[in-house]
Image (cartoon, rainbow, N blue to C red; front, side, top):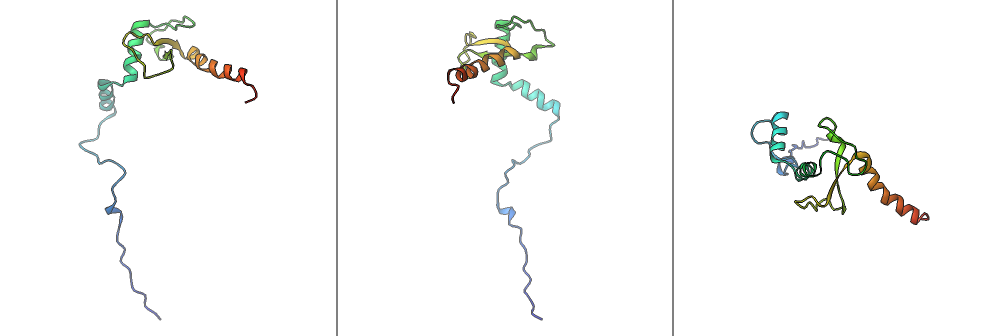
Length: 119
């Protein structure tokens, strides 16, 4: 019978950096995370809030009026299509309900198709 030498296994994972960032401090509750996000605010929410203040809670296309309960159905459409173009006076925004906003963006697709049906 031939004896094979035993090989000692060494964990090599410790020499590699972890993909995950190290946790610092205590775990935050959901309320703390939400509070922090609201405090910092995102650029998208700030221009939406400004557009709603400037243009009111009404769809610019169909005229539907919204209240605080249904405000989530009102979106901000960038007239020039550039979501980074957010002038302080709101000249590039119009408030559209989700249905009119969807219609606005699908018009270009339909027009392209009707001009070139062979593609």
